[in-house]
Image (tube, rainbow, N blue to C red; front, side, top):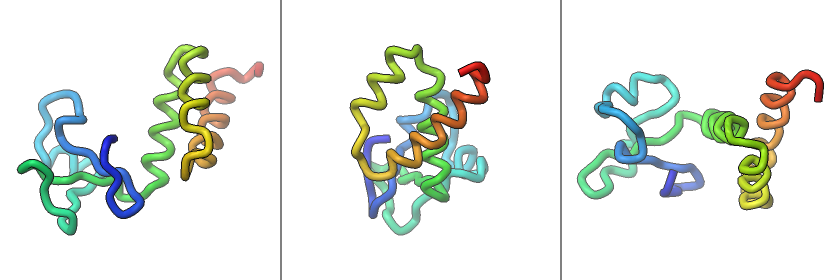
Length: 101
């Protein structure tokens, strides 16, 4: 997620692994083709339908990292806008994965 457009993160198809078309990605229901922003380098700009989707997926991604990398990722991004929501999701996700903690 490299580009922030109007307070939301936008992505290009180059950021997505695999052989997906724009319609494949748009049909997921959480990512849309951002018609207002147009194209970047000839590729359509994709955005999350709602910021909450992005925040949850960021938290999920961090939860899949080894513990030392989780801490590093949190330290690198703490204080950034919307990180509070990501941390709340992260805490919920990791508690579900580790009910003894």
